[in-house]
Each structure stands twice: as C-alpha cells, then as structure tokens.
Image 1: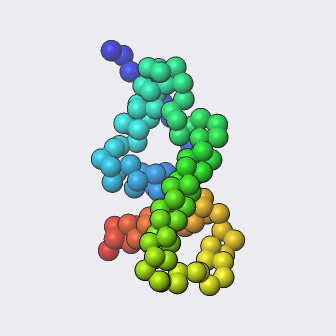
Image 2: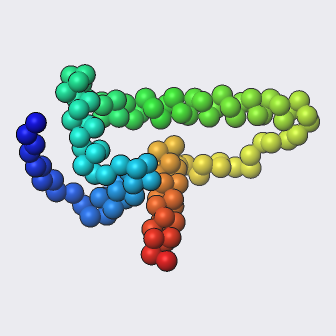
Image 3: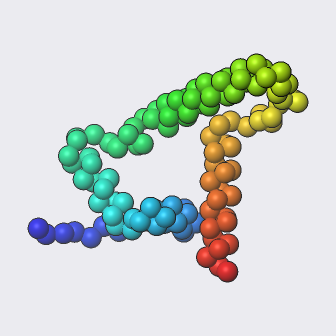
Length: 117
C-alpha cells in the first residue's frame, strides 16, 4: 500500500496540549490522524465528535446525568435530614463547557509541570 505525507499547520500550544492528551492514551499524532481518516472512509461520515451540534448534545447529556445523580444525592441527604442547599450560585455564572475547560487546563498544567520537573 502506498502512503502519502500530510502537512498541517497548528498552533504550537494547541498541538502540545493535544499531544499530551493523546500520549496519555498511547496514541501518536499520526495514529490519531489515521484513525479519523479511517473512520470517515469506513463509515462515510464524520466522527461523532466532529458532527455539527455533537458537542452541545454531549454537554446536555452529561449535564442531565449530573443533575440526575445530584438529584439522587439530594434525595438521600434529605432523607437523612442533611441540609445541602448551596449558598449562592456555586457555578458563579459559568457554563458547563467553561468549567470543563478549566478542569482540563488545570490537568494539562499539572502534567506540563511534572514534565518540566
């Protein structure tokens, strides 16, 4: 089978963060690119994470699961007579996507700190 070389331009910080994530799962950048192309060729569609609205749908599903789990926790706490009412807006106006991004940024910063040590 013949191969071709692809050249891609990407912001250095974006590449470093992506490389760290993929490396933790044991993937090289080439393996990730091949996986995307193989999926598209095999299914004739974009990978689910790239389909329009997929991220919003995933966020809504995760939010619903969190609410369901949180609701169960509140019900159990209430049954035990525990007051778990939050004081003020615990999200401070942030969206789920912003909170998730902050968590991932903190995780990447920690990994980069470990790599630099």
